[in-house]
Length: 176
Length: 195
Image (cartoon, rainbow over all chains, first blue to last red; front, side):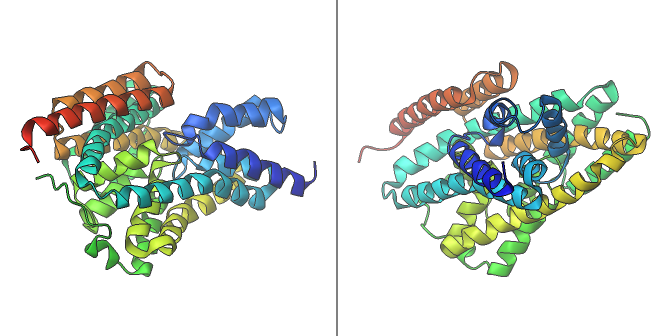
């Protein structure tokens, strides 16, 4: 496949997945894996796992895994196309949904829906943090770091940057 | 206090300059190691005070159940509330710009750094903390919004079903939204006077 063909393929595949990525990119991760490894044969499963580990560690939304896949396949252009394709359609859908929600004159309905959604979202966020912790906490020290970070963010105003830095230092010191 | 009436454009959000919009979301993306949400909450609620914790939690509720990354959706909506479609573009660019750029830099150099024990240990520690930051953000929102029992039940169910049991995300969300809205509607009928 030529680069142009790969870019088009990436764009089409990721754009269609974008609209069903409910709950974030993690929801479509198995499908991305299937497409990239099984269907198109663009990379091996091991290579995909390596990209995933890298994406987990780096800044930014989970969408970064798609940037990495795009980069691996077609360099910088691939990363940009992949990110735009994965985030574009869902962002447009979100924009439209918001305009519609905004126009809901019956503010009572909207208030009800929003009050119902908030705790569900909190539960889902808790779930994603928990899943990350399961993957990252490979020692009692790591568990302790997770607990301390949780408490620091929940009960204090300490800038998370320092928490991460301190945790990195603790990791080097052998705690994690 | 819950305010059921929300204006279509918040005057305070419309007052944000486009430059501030971009740099604020840039900041969120820049520092979001292992997860942007804690930073988004901190910048939007604590630093800029664009929303309070309750408004943030309700907005994130919508962002979480719509397709796409929750923080990208958040930037679309806040951007749109301050400067319409252009605002959405500005905010999304801000939040994705640095992560994508940094990602490419890291990926390029990762191979040479990956085997350094110091790098691996530091990343191991930071990853553990990053998970804690996300859990902590959820806890903080929980404490600030103080959901009633019905909210605790749906939220708890979401956590157990998705986090522990790993049931299919889409079905869990659909079922919980239906149950949650039904419970919320019943509760509102019980306390509000007949119109």
